[in-house]
Length: 96
Image (cartoon, rainbow, N blue to C red; front, side, top):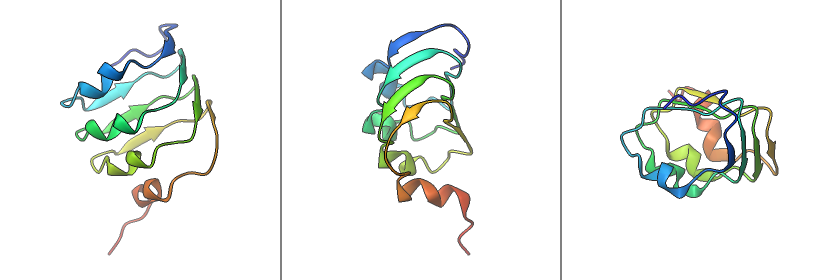
């Protein structure tokens, strides 16, 4: 789903988390806001998640760490608070 740069605003609808076959979520450079729901874990086939340069707020859900196929994650330029969940850190290290 490529909707970047479309001046979209408001919160992500919960229905987006029902798109379980989604592999790419590109929502960067919009005016989206609100929190990323723990329901993000439903998008288990997601390989790319680009949500940078929006107005997302709140803590990042640890459930992002459940997206084991995720290869490309860009989230800068938002207003997230708190610490990065440890579950996400597994993306950056090759465990041997």
